[in-house]
Image 1 (tube, rainbow, N blue to C red):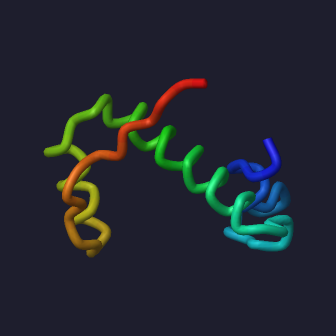
Image 2: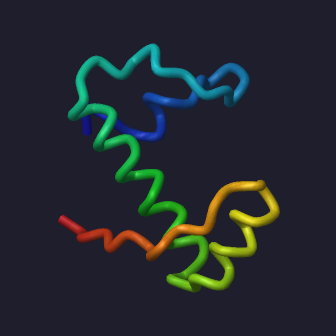
Length: 70
């Protein structure tokens, strides 16, 4: 996978980086992987996602993205 979580997180310190994202396709794949991780962690529970967004000061999301396994 050209774009993945490993491409947007530095190994040394875990900080966010765009250093290895070369195309919009890479960015799309990296974000898709992040959404998949979030959906898995919350087990599709929208209330849990809403409480996380509230705690972080982010707006609520309308729906949990559907991730299709390839």
